[in-house]
Image 1 (cartoon, helix red, strand yellow):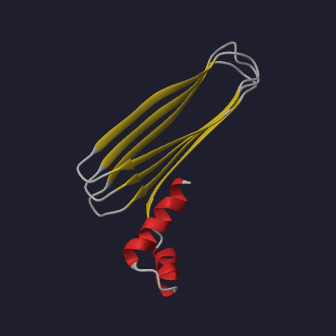
Image 2 (cartoon, rainbow, N blue to C red):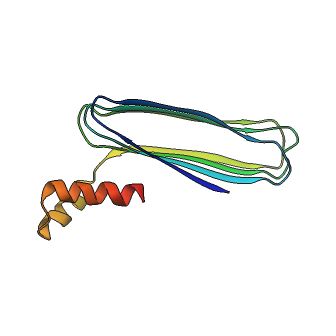
Length: 128
């Protein structure tokens, strides 16, 4: 099972995503990815835990957070966790927080796309 969750946090808004993803049966597989774009003046807190119960032998779980900050006052806090109560499982997590790559922006603008539209294209690609 793959699950993709997307957020667009506007100026002055604040979001919190706090979830526990439970694996409670043998051989369950799951991948959850949360992508967020945070405009200048917005903030997001992403807290997620993969919980693999004692009876979930053979589980395969992955949790990923990806955040794109669009301004100097954009804020993001990410906190992925693993809690594993059995053996013979695969579980991992990853998190990245960053701003728009200036080389990508330069490339689009050098092709005649204005800055505002270039940023819009990068955001759309990030969320897709």
